[in-house]
Each structure stands twice: as structure tokens, then as C-alpha cells.
Image (cartoon, rainbow, N blue to C red; front, side):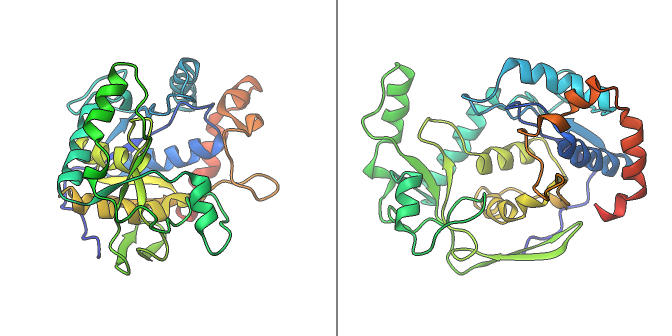
Length: 302
């Protein structure tokens, strides 16, 4: 599978933070690149609040997200605070769209119920799993059909406050040995082999919420995003998402993956790096103009 270049439309980019902690300098640089690319193409920038993680998303982080982005100089034309034609812009308000996509995958026989825990999967692997990406699924539940577990009744029981007797995820069945290729705006031609570089992946979680891969595909298509700018740690996710775009009969956007920002030990920045959060930098009296000027000089490198 080779992703075709998207049909030429007016440029639409997006910022898609998740309010699970304070935004840090790495977020700022990636978002800055997204904004620069939108501006250089005379396009529109959309802000989407990816607030689907019920246990980690907090109201105070949402408030901080808006404050910190505005302090740093970000300007978006569509978002939770300024509307737009493709809202709502909070993912927690878009569940009906995700359910419709899940149903299309289910009726097409492209997903199956999986009762395996992460511990089960790691225990079944022949080699130890390293890194932050999800382990390649060994196919334990692949033979199960959607009729094995009643997804609809499971949702109904949750709506009544009851816990279904069987907890399961929905996994997307990848076409084994198929090569997924795409041209990245920064890294150039990329290709990954389904079943080797990544396995069957979760699209709907056992807590009755969409997984990241499904939610962003549905949202980027619905919001008519023409280019997704994000960190290089998500290159492999792009291969997964291209398979979902095809399965859902949606046109994929272009992709531009940025170099990751690292700390003094060479580790990529995460929300646990409080000292480099935008909030901490603001409290220290740092000026975003100085950082933006430095990044302007090195724009092509990112």
C-alpha cells in the first residue's frame, strides 16, 4: 500500500494537545512548526482538545493549555474557543462519530474482540519488548468473530452503570506482509511492513472509549486536515492510520514528522519534565520570542 498525495485543497493544519499535564518545550516546537507551515501555505490552523483519557485529563490542564499556547504566541482560526465549521473541537464531544467508524469496521469484518491484557501479550512474545511503542500482537484472539462477544449489549450495560462480565478491546486486523509506504514531508519516503513492524492494534478500548489511532483518523478526516505535523515518534502510527483511512474509505492527509526535542541526557521530553514546561518557563520570566528566533534559524533542520 502506497499513500497517494492528497488532493490539492486549501491548507488546513492542526494543533492537537492532550490535557494530561502541562505542555512542555517539545510540544511548543512541534506546534510552532505546524503553525509556520500553515502560515507559509496561507492556510487555516485548527486547535483540537484531545481529552479522551478520562483518568488523566483534568480541567486545570485544559485551562493551562489555552493560557500557555496563547502566551507562546500561537494563533488558531478554529477551535473550542472560537468554533469553526467542523466542530465540536473537544474529542469528548465527538463520541458518536467514533462509534459510527467502529461500526463500519465491525460490519466490514476488519476488527475482532480481544480479551488479552498487556501482560498476556508480553508473556506470549518470543522476544522481550523494548521501547514505548505497543508490542506486536501475537494474534491470540484473531480467530474470534465479533459475534463471540456482544458489543452492543456491553455498551448498554455500561450505560446503566453495570460492568459487563467480559472486558475486551476491539483490534484492527492488519494485512500481514503488506508494505505501507508514504512520503513524509521531513523524512522523505518511509515504509513499514504490517505484521512485522507493527501488528493488530487496538481501535476501541475495554473502557468503551476509542483508542488514539481511530480517534485521530476520524477527526482529521472530519476536520478536513490536509497535513498532520507531529513528532517523529509517531511515524509508525502513520502506517497504522493509513490502513484505517483505507478501511474507512477516507482520504488521508499529508504527513510531516518533526525531530524530537531531548533533554541533557538525550531523552525525549515528556510531561514529567516540569522544569521545561511552558508554565515553568513563563514563571521564570523566559521570553518565547527568543526561542522562536532560534527556531527560525534552524527551521529546515526540524
